[in-house]
Image (cartoon, rainbow, N blue to C red; front, side, top):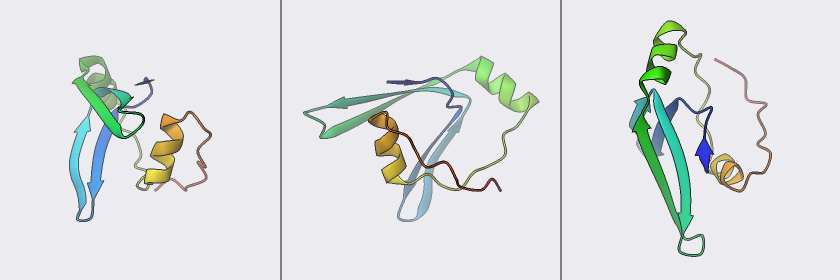
Amino acid sequence: MVMEKVTRFEVIDENGRAYTRWGVDVELGVQDDGKTLKVFIKHNPEKSKALSDNPPKPFGDISIEDVIKLIQNTPVDDTRKQV
C-alpha cells in the first residue's frame, strides 16, 4: 500500500521517537499471513522541497490502532486537535 500523502515517517517506541524521516515516500507491505509489517522508505526530493517551502503543523502521535486501521484501509478517527 503506497501512502501518497505521507511526507514524514516516524517510529515511536517506549522511549519516544526512535526514528524520524521527512520528505519521503512510504509504502507498507504485509507478509507472513499478516504477521510481518514491512515499511519501505525512499527519499523524495520533491516532497522535501514542498516541506521546506510550507512546513506542516505537527499533530499528536498516531496510535498503533490508527496505523492498523490505515493498513486495513478503515476510517481513522481524525478528531485529534492540531498543535
